[in-house]
Length: 502
Image (cartoon, rainbow, N blue to C red; front, top):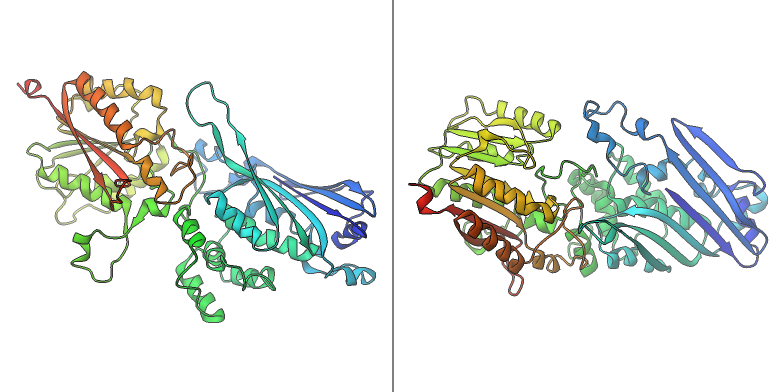
């Protein structure tokens, strides 16, 4: 993680005094396991360039966390990306410049605008490129966003999800750094510390002189404060945020990640809730609205669960159910209330997720209406498990897109020819609908997705699997339908051939 600050033109050499760092010395400090270095690569009266680099200890990043027993905690990007962590690491090194308090002889240069070039990255952001560009372009910067090419020996992704950003423009050193210290965490949308009212003070301090006129102020404030109560506190102090955000802000909020996103690469078949709130939150359908004049948004994940439980409830045979990739057990818990259900295997490879599922299921003990207590089960689609054979219903809810496409045919063959459920339910994103969310053309709804299919592609695969396994199938959509794009989620229902019942 790094930041390169370059000043050009007459009196550019003054910048070193504003930063309070001698160009002839290397700033090298280690504090709490993090090494921060500042090195001048150019130092003259016409050009000053300084590299700020932070190198944290990856073990210290996770030591003492609640997930300390789980080795997957080490699989994350926090060691590398330019984020709120990076800003906290370098704050002391740049404190003089941020506060605008150099030595008295150089105070007059605090408000002097230099020709600047600022490079930082890599940045892991869930915002579309055009929103990233608007965050900085309206501040007077020319912005370049670069994505690295990803080379794999198999079909996974050919475009990196991280970006390197270059800003060029005329700005004071203090204001440029304050803008970065506020906007870099907005890009990353992940805070490594407890978010309190101190964040409001940070917004006031770093946003002074530019934030009030920023067209994406609402987005910046919301992604900085995260929580509704803190946002309301800010509005009480500064006035209500615009209730009718700009189109770019709408696009940005549509692409926002989960507010509690951990950015860990969890197990490939562990269920997730999509990180795009447009994929998570949709307006209630017209049928729903008839009973709710307030049009309360409904999470797409809830609509998926509702569609699946409605199908299972309507089946004549549903005594034994397998929820593959059950995650924390949210769907399994809903299935437990369906009359006629006698057993539910909540199959999940992640130990952490299974523990949370156990906690969820324990709270269901003695609740009215529970037909069968789900059973957390260690398992994976990559390994055969005879206890999964000949169940009435098997469910793969938002699972297959986490598996490399070339491995799917073998997995589906195992399910349809070896496990032989009477009914198999599979849901997956509809790639065409991503355009409704104003997503980038090659962007996936979740960083761990290996693919996303159009309706035609999904139907073609389902037809192939059904024919080989002697199943009939039908496909329906879940979520609000848009003409030309379909619905955000595709659901396939495979029903075993009649001769297989005899």
